[in-house]
Length: 416
Image (cartoon, rainbow, N blue to C red; front, side, top):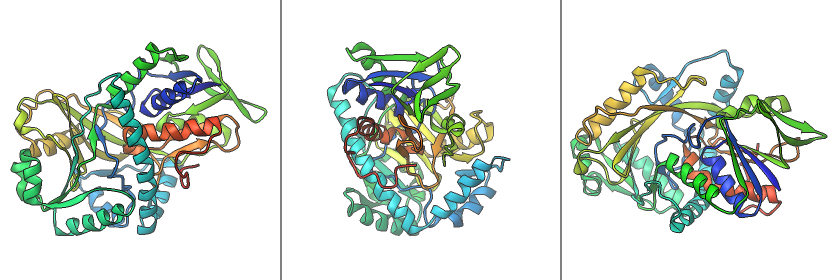
């Protein structure tokens, strides 16, 4: 089958990788001049298979007003004349309850564990490196209430296969001595030994290079914009680009937040909106002052991951539209927060700042599988901050859907 994949980020490339192994003729098309240059370029770097609870949780609504009043807060909302933004917000508020959050977490864990197994297969094959590290993850908790909430969440997730433990401050510092400077801010933590880290852009480049060097029938059309999906007699036939028509038997849309305008003419209104995030990538100049374990500061909503000899810092969730422009105020906040936690890890002169648009659904569940109303059209988007984590699992779901096979996991809640 001729399969056209729109999007050369980690979700699109993982799908191409699995489909090519099954013998399909695959074309990957992206507007960027190279693979992994959108949201996959400089994300948080954490492969977070057990820490997948959605942003829409039962306690979030009460925190939102404080976050919005705080210029340094992790969440920012800028109202726009965009019905899609307001529709997304209403859906998000409806999802902020315990029942929905628990259901979403269970479904995401199922998908994440599938993805973990498939990602580890890629690692074990050793075809390329991407600064992968089985480092484990430590989530820092600021107070007793957060610790008790974490105990409940860990107990709940244990019923679904997670292996995590709540630890006290001394255990946190023993696990990660580089946190000694903020010991007074740590009430405890959640340690998940099975979590991993890696450079998502290098993972994308490795997948693409492996496909290009193999005997699989894979081609890349980079620097090519999609102008229109072509549909005839109820079936997708390909896409129109500035260079002409690219025909296909099946089309996979893996364009993240950019998929909405492309699908709207087909009557598909995606419940996806971008949450803008920021990251820094610092050279590690003092090995003992940088974390070995991936760290999440749950109060500030900032993550830290060691990628070889670099430290990736990522945070912020700005519901402000589609601009990827780096705002100096937000960048300064992230630098200050990171410097307080790991002040001596770098000299803070080379920051390599970046911003990207995470495609998020109100519940936090991705949208996977066949699109309604059009044969041969498939969706793989809405993974939010878990794009790298879920990429291989989502690819397996898409490959099964395209081939008409039984899905590898139950798909309740993962359709449009």
